Length: 222
Ligand code: DC
Image 1 (cartoon, rainbow, N blue to C red):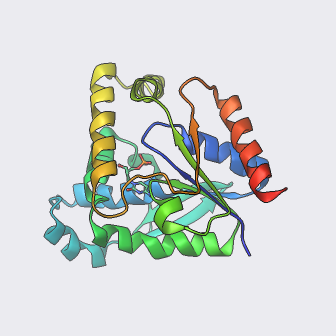
Image 2 (image 1 turned 90 degrees about the vertical axis):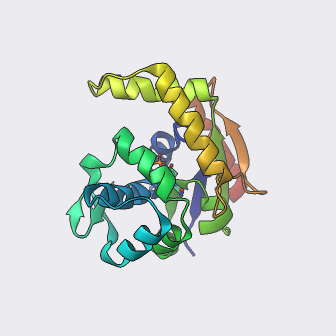
Image 3 (image 1 turned 30 degrees about the vertical axis):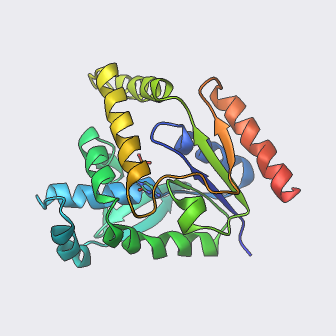
């Protein structure tokens, strides 16, 4: 049976950075489910499809999302095209937050996510991994940080990429995204009963990795 680690938490909590590090450390595959939602959002934006449930339902059969790995890095293929380089914009983030609330979008990705976890040892991050996608995961973490810390991390990332941005605006967007992710009817962002809560506001990356490795060892006896 494959080993599954589920990491859920709000935007900017450091899930992907930490999950990538853990995957390397443990020899697991890292599965970024947010990228799948982003790919669908990108398709809708590109094809000027409005974010209403009806329009999205009609478009769904034309959207094919697949995952491949290149040098251990997840690549998202949208109708055969690698979209990794175009799904990290603020526009796509905002669209993904809205469209991921629709059951039709979530159902479309559920099977892909579960099949990846059934066939390999994975660390999967998202919003509903511990609660909905992999309720049987051996290790579940709910990773969070204050909205101010998360905004500052996102700001630093964008500045490093050479983008101009406003810290207060980023924090407002993060808070709005949290609201949407936590209050939607289908698969809201929520800590699973058996998940371990980790607040990384005052931890550096090394400390978070160490903390999660300790939790993994404690839960699995490995
Ligand atoms: O983690 P991220 O920022 O790449 O996620 C993009 C959006 O997708 C985010 O607003 C929430 C949504 N998402 C989700 O609803 N469920 C997941 N398992 C992962 C992401």
